[in-house]
Amino acid sequence: MASAYRIRRASNNQFYFILEAENGRIILSSEMYMRMESVMEGINSVRVNSVVDERYIRKTENSGKPYFVLTAKNKEPIGTSEIYSSKEVMEKGIESVKQNGPTEQVVDESGKKKTEY
Image 1 (cartoon, rainbow, N blue to C red):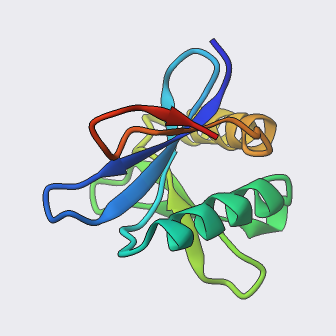
Image 2: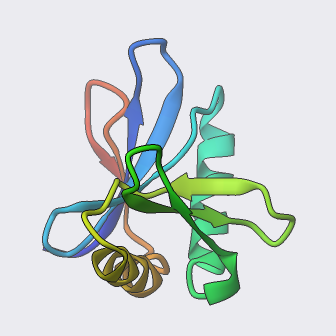
């Protein structure tokens, strides 16, 4: 299975995307978007910025578990990771986003019919 961006529709009718690694695991989730054009801009931003280590902000949630936020050059967030069990596992997650982020495959799951771009 190849890595892919999957566009989905939330219950509030807005769009978001996830980046799925080759093993099928979700490694990055976007914010909500009102328009499909904005979703595609977000995906393109991840493609460009995912390979730059300085774009990753390493954070810790209230329980002390780590996660990261991928930002654009202007420091705006473009994707958030899951919560990890350790900093070492989080770093592996960052490496996975760096490896899978540039993928060209986009699957639109937001409607009744799946569309691949």
